[in-house]
Structures are given as structure tokens and as C-alpha cells.
Image (cartoon, rainbow, N blue to C red; front, top):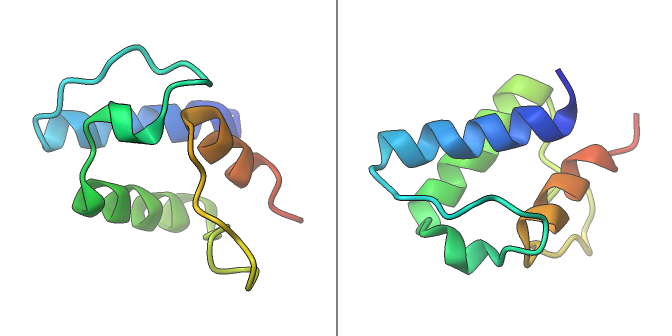
Length: 81
């Protein structure tokens, strides 16, 4: 399973658990428009860290939180091996 698929699947699963109605998850969709609150994003990052072994937002001092779904996916795809 690709990194993109893992991230999208995790977003969809958390939305279901948190009873959030997701819009279509396109790369240019703003993360604010997903309907996730800060708790849902914290769960998402923690779950992805458990699954992938990395948190791209803490491995660098200058890491910024992404603005769009595409930026979020790329943050995980671009983690150095």
C-alpha cells in the first residue's frame, strides 16, 4: 500500500470514528475544509506514526503543518529514509 493510500485511509477511518462528513479528498482541499478539529488531527498524526514509524512534523525543527490534503500526504511521502 502506498503512503498516499495509507494517509487517505487513515483520514477516512478517523472521520468515520469522529462522525465527520468528509468532502472529496483532493490534493488542493484545505485541511480546514475536512471538518477535522485539533483532536482529529492529533489522532491522525499519532495513528500514522504508529503505522509508519515517523512523524514528519517533529523530525525537523522548521517543519510547518501543511495547509492542504496534498501537502499533508507529501509530508509523509517526503520523509527521508
